[in-house]
Amino acid sequence: MTAALIILIFLIFAALMISRKMPAILAVPLMAIGFAAVARTPLNTILSDVMVGGAKQLVEAYLMVFAGAMLGRVVMQTGVAEGIIKRAAEFGGDQPLAVAVTLMIGIGLLFTTLTGLGAIIMVGGLALPIMMSIGVPRKLAGVLFILAYGLGYVFNIAAWGFYQQTFKIDREPIRNFAIVLFVIDAIAVLIFLVIAARRMNKYGAWAVALDEDTGKRDVMLIALLLPILPLILHIGIGWQVLPAFLISAVIGVLITRPKEIVKQLTSAAVKGLEDVAPAIILMIGIGMLLTATRLPGVREALQPLIQGIHFSSPFVYVLFFGLLSPLALYRGPLNIYGLGIGIFSLIASLNLLPPAALVAAVMCLVQVQNACDPTNTHNVWVANYVGMRVEETTKETLLLKVAVCIAGLIAGSLFFL
Image: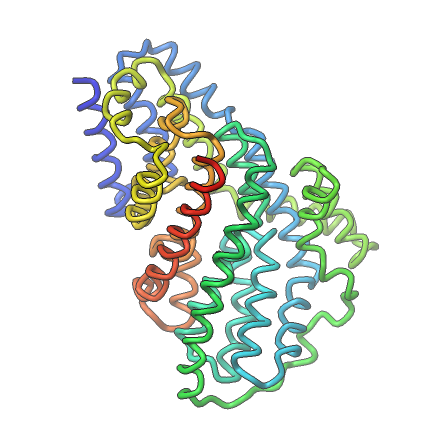
């Protein structure tokens, strides 16, 4: 009976999120409270453990996301982002494919650090007009931008910190698998670009000279490496994610605007927090749901259902997460930032998969969700900017990203199972 009620609550909130009648930031914590209640958890335990304890469970992840957003604001405010995009366009010359490739490299580089819709608008507002002005079809430019964003996100160490905190795993397996996933994704994007080149050749457009006055030409060349500095400090030197982001932000301002260090850092902190406030609120709910799914009553009720799936079998692992990867869309049951956190936390708490294999599956599913989910704010903005329906971005990217997900899962099964 308890299991049936938990599944019913899950389905109700799934329907509310998919129909967009309730946002995930409300649905996820309410689901956590509902799970705990139907499992006959005492009220004091719900208040103290699920709500208060759950809200604090991912506090390190919140801080890492905030620090990453602060650095992202420094990258945008000081002209580093604009400098990267402009130099990438100039490097590509007047060939549409070359410009598309160099801009995608620049976009991917930026989104190893940048987060939030503000960053999407800033970078997209620079890159998309350049792509379209030299012959890349409008809709194709939007799709390429989204694919580049997903490619860069593989190395977003703020996301790595979230995985570490959620699934209690060391950095090394995440780093090693990220390299493999990046190679798989890059090959897939390259194939997509080769096919897309035919569409560019059939499309005519007039070239527009870059406005020299709009570029931040006073940004030193070394400053363009700022987005990957946290990666260097984190992976190369072994610093924790939080200080890697914060020190990078300070270094970025010292290189670009040393006389405005207080103003720039203060502004970056405030605006960065605004950028990621929805994500932080959602993580509070995710912490509550993680705590709820680990309650003895909830685990005992759902254990017979989920233990019937042999996740540790490489075949089942690839088949389950690969073929069902579209369920990561619409805040669905395999979306780590929605309903999926309940399923993944159950798999983790019941030890049905090694933590590294579970995180690998999550990273593969995130690739599908990041590029294909029409409920993503960045998908909506990009689609509106280039004049296409947001569902078209899903149609253009879904098959490619499902293939990337399956290939990544095969690699994950070989490494971790």
